[in-house]
Image 1 (tube, one colour):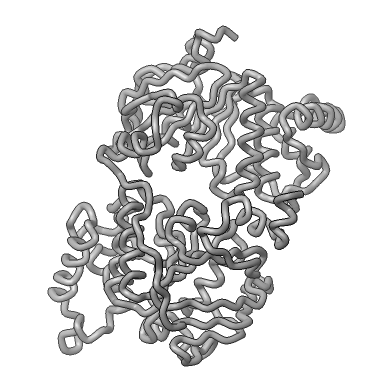
Image 2 (image 1 turned 90 degrees about the vertical axis):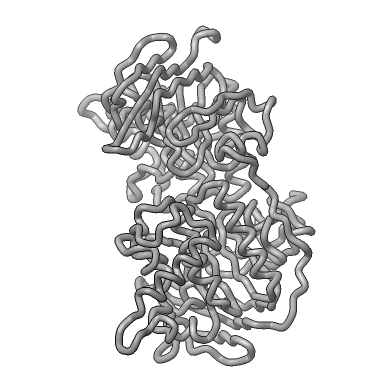
Length: 515
């Protein structure tokens, strides 16, 4: 491949969905044998652009060139034929098939499946040695870790002879150790001349692994720069259009009395699976306890039990008073009355009713309070006035309480939920994934509100899959794996490597890190 000819060149790409202009006259050149990052806020148009390149969408205008040749890509089969492979954020694997069967699925040769399987086994062995992609070809997908499933997706693309790989938020569900291994794989692929496009919102990853980075904002390409010639601060400003404080500005905590005491908490889900296996922890006034872990290791169940959405056994005390864990007085309403606020992990399914207005969403859970009543009816004027105050104080945009929640961006939806819970002045605030799908400018604001609440003497239990967020906000860190707490750490005395080992179930982290 000629190194002076771009592996990919997009010229004047535009795409609209009704009145929404997702991509507007975008041009980009990606050179062969490089890792090219694409970043931008939620809804900036990154995924739409890559979906056009992979044949999921057809552009309204513009041209695609692959290795200097104009190429029409009407569907994903045409993209694969052009040497493009895509690893999606949510893997496209058949769970009860083996690795080998998944790799050849859709790429079988002739009528004899055995011939395809035999060929794939040899190719997989070669690819595994070449790129550090070792995975048991006979293992069932459902038995593999998330990191190994991702390797299968990469192997699928390489088996189809992809020279260009698109990875969409590839580290979202990986432990730090798995993310490090993925970066080594990408290094090996780059060294072999493969071209990689990396879509991520994590500035640290962009700085660590990419050669070049393109920034998108509101459907347009705002800049393309060499990674070595930029900084996280400059990239954040290009993404948002203003300067953004990337660090969390907070004083050391001064923890007070124990507000929440949890002992031997156990929870079995509707399928009979034990999600919490004897959780014990304390939470003090004026501190943020961060819960780190790969998604699916019991953090969600912990929030649901404490928030009154799920039954459990064990003991939970608030200010020394036992809280019922099943039956009467154990629901979300009782928890709110006791002084526990809850910002759920999934704002769309648990935090908001998207078709309802902002002013209605701003009081859900508290709508029976006396301040919102007028005789036997709700006082709509009082509710609207209350919502307008929250919208102003939490800088919700647009500042229109009559808009349906679905018409706000993810960050502004999250602000509505945060305003509702924080302004109730709870003693304990449970927060799940506070900045998931949230733009970088809103992240800064949300972090400031969480720290303010801590400084006012509230106790905060923070669950996040973002280790950077856990380190930035937490005064103490607990790590969960398989429904258990593997250990507690002081953020100033640990690092991502040690937490990553705990997240993978390794308790003797000192020995493991030296071994």
